[in-house]
Image 1 (cartoon, one colour):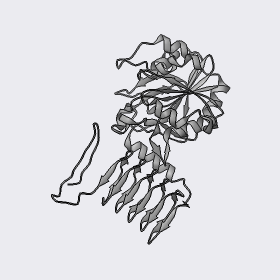
Image 2 (cartoon, helix red, strand yellow; image 1 turned 60 degrees about the horizontal axis):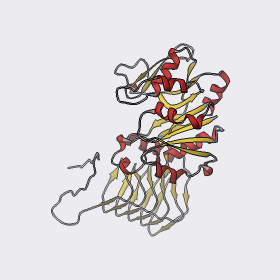
Image 3 (spheres, rainbow, N blue to C red; image 1 turned 180 degrees about the vertical axis):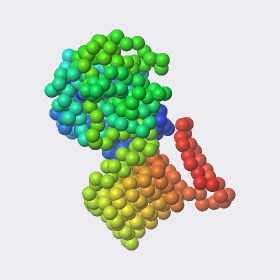
Image 4 (tube, rainbow, N blue to C red; image 1 turned 60 degrees about the vertical axis):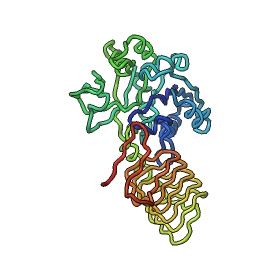
Length: 355
């Protein structure tokens, strides 16, 4: 069995961060979201993996390499434009051959893995099986309507009036029959080959398409609030490891992870938090559910429930929370009058100021 991991797309909901970086490489607990999916695939016993890449393909290649450190053998499949999930299956036909395979969206965060899904798919001989999860706002997702036996009888893509609260998670198991389906469908109104249309084609042709309900935790990390929530979930599982330098009148409470090459001076750290290699926290407060990546500086500042990416500096800022700060960002306090905010903000940014 093979796996097809989708690591293209434009990540419009996370702009401007995703103007220059792959959304699948946004870190939670200082580790890219994509890596957790690759771990799940390996744990399920799949080693032959194709990764579909787009404009940020070079970054994904650099991060994943040949896959050996994940226990995988990775083949990269370039997609010239984001033309839909079914289009990814279409262009991966040479890699997939006639094997059964998993499609795994690279920006999905799933606790509990996919081993149970694969065992059921193999044992019962379905043509396709979709991982589903109950959600509060099904109109924001692809939605599945089930028969009494768990068979999927109808799919809807972001319906105004959902027929169920079961969202399509973004993990699919397919037999080779899906190749005929992706060739048979037409582009949707948004110009993409939709995987929901391909699966519905299988259903209409009488194929056995079944559901598998998520029993663990799942999030689509395409929005800020979802990334911060995933970060919180993972940090709740960390064990304290104060390997770095802790100096001066510092106070450490709770599950705090400090990399051996990090320095903490005259600061208060309240876990769970992780602080990466080469980072410095000086005369600052870092509160719960915060991940600070490598080579950051937090000085005379306060931050909690946030993610700070590599190489960024936060200085003299009294309070930051519920934030995602990109790479090589400077957040500083103006020291001269007038008492005004000075901003250089990129396209599609979100800034909230307390006035």
